[in-house]
Length: 158
Image 1 (cartoon, rainbow, N blue to C red):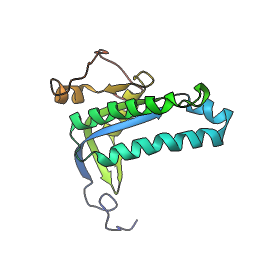
Image 2: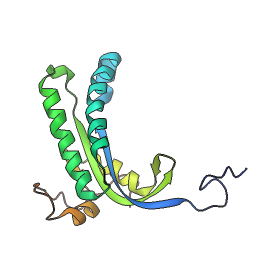
Image 3: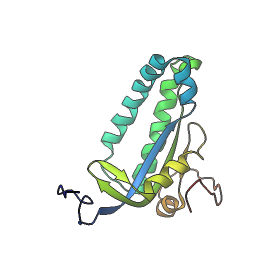
Image 4: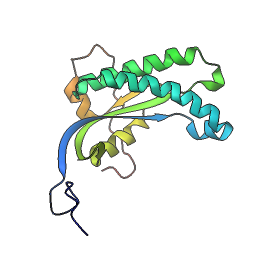
């Protein structure tokens, strides 16, 4: 295998950093796609515009800013859903984790990303779930109400 000059492709070390990862998933996406792929994608595009617009405004990777952004995204999506018929409403679960990641171009990989993906499954539809590492960083910094979910176990996460 040839070394193409990118970190991790030859003998060079991977670029690692501590990052606050925001992971989102659509509730009932498979069911919606089965009912109508084109309609689901059309609805998703509108929701995605909200995500993209809010993430572009986010200038920092601090945990408090990411959690605030996640709650604002959920609020904006609720407002958008209020203008759609019930069968067109799309809800998201969002997870936020602070962890070590491997940077490869614009992709973030590794355990920190995997944890964010797993904890978003614990969020209520339309809600945000944060890891303990995020909570430790944002405690007493945001005027948000938090509910402890206690210790959790997730598939393939020790």
